[in-house]
Image (tube, rainbow, N blue to C red; front, side, top):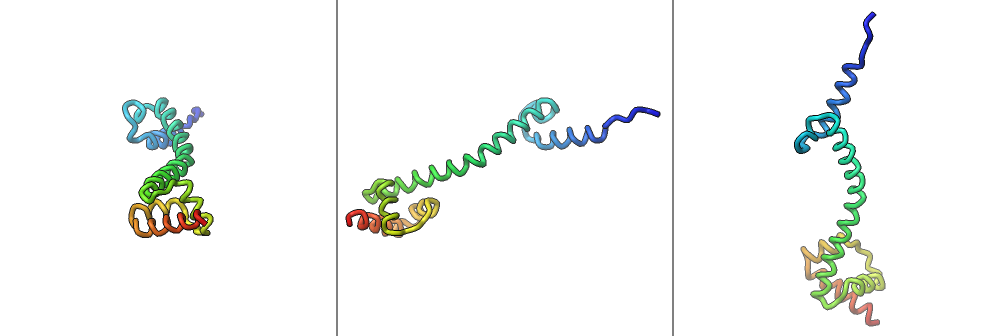
Length: 119
């Protein structure tokens, strides 16, 4: 009786990995051994950057809020302190969006924060 090899399973496994490496540059998309390393690395980056994306967006929002606060004569930290003391609960994403799309509403919040800090 002839020896059975795992031909179809092996082909399927390799094909699946090469499909994941589709679009990679040069040999990384064609050769199994290099593609395997490239895919492993890319999956590590993807995992890491899913966590990092949250940090990056928060930094962006804070930068935008800070720039808008400077136009109102406030620092970012004093603005946030004023909002907290006034009991205004609004997240940084919404504040950032407001600073860009609705400057009048942001200005009203900045005035409220200023008034609360003075008291």
